[in-house]
Length: 372
Image 1 (spheres, rainbow, N blue to C red):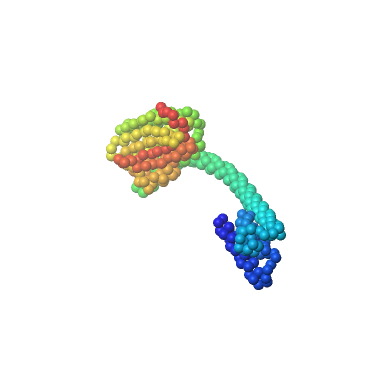
Image 2: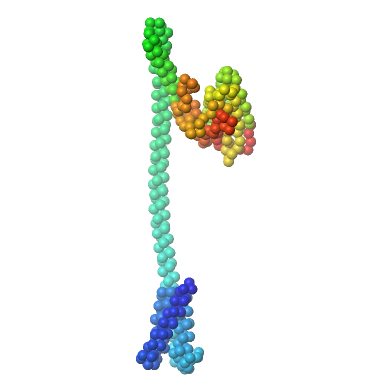
């Protein structure tokens, strides 16, 4: 802003020098303000009303001192000079006022144009968002239909495969029982391959059928997780006794969940802890604590553990880290756990335990005011 006022003063000085040059060249000029009118007008138009006012006042002082009698002093000798001074001052101030109004109007118009452009851009953005939202809704509906169709296909396929597989394994067992004596070693080996493959296929189909049955949150109701753990322990009673396992159950909350699904989660995690045990007797600890408006459930064991680089892969369906000869199974248990937990709006992950073994964590939404 100071630069604009300095430029206005410089313009007045230039006008004074030009006025002095004209007087020296052409003699006495009766129009004392001949170079100052355009200067004030130019200052008001280009620099604004404020600099125009400064140019007006400074021009009046210079003309009064240098170009009006009595010269080189402030004062006006006659009526004509007074009128000339008044006309110049009033006209120049009027020009400054008009210029200021014009500049303000231009700024308002520019601002209105900017707002109009912003409004158009906002309308276009809202239209794009609306189209994208509609497209996302459509894709989501298609995805839901596709998932439903896929789940239905998996259920039907696995269900329909049960009978022919049952026949394969049954007749394979009959062949092995009746004709083993008449077969050579290769024949008996091939026959055992057929029977084992059929049995393994049956296990995979049952696992796929079980996986396809897990849909969303099931039938949510207030469920005491401690009771789900006890049901899981009852289902695993034989394997727990054979392994000499110790189960330490801490305080667990009551949450909105499907009882059967929660029981299955605990049964799979505890069953894995017993299956993948180390040389020491298996020990499993279960507990829970509130965490950011949800429950954080912990299942820790002292088994053989899992390499951290496989921590994400173990939750993939049919993914195994060990051979079937060493650890039998289908590799679907943890995939079911993840499907159930995520269906309830939570997350599940694994961390290596400090003293060996693995610690599984999963979250469940719910009020964290207390536990049972």
